Image 1: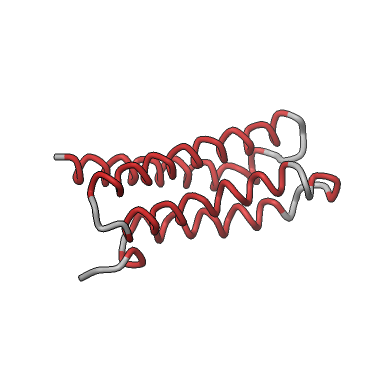
Image 2: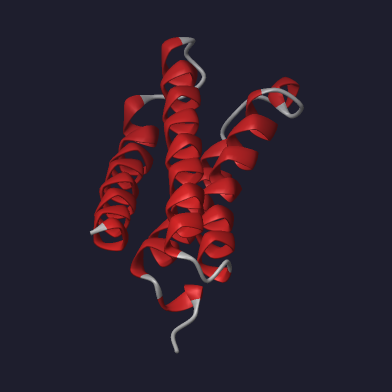
Length: 117
């Protein structure tokens, strides 16, 4: 029996969380309790919900948690784009993370489709 740690989507989501923490180090200190906190929580939520859903041992529950993970992915993308828009981050700093969010999103949808059909 495999564990959630064997899932490629969980591994990529962990990579995304790591990149997000590194990206947050570029933000101004005054955002420590604002955007930094929000971005880190959203990034951690993605692999956490994948793991929790896997641990429920029910495809229906797993899909529900994957949907939550995907919502957190969208939240993180929005926060990163906002950081660009207000001048906190440059595209050269965010591009890799945004590409990774898209990849994780596609992996989540692929897993959801395989579980539902």
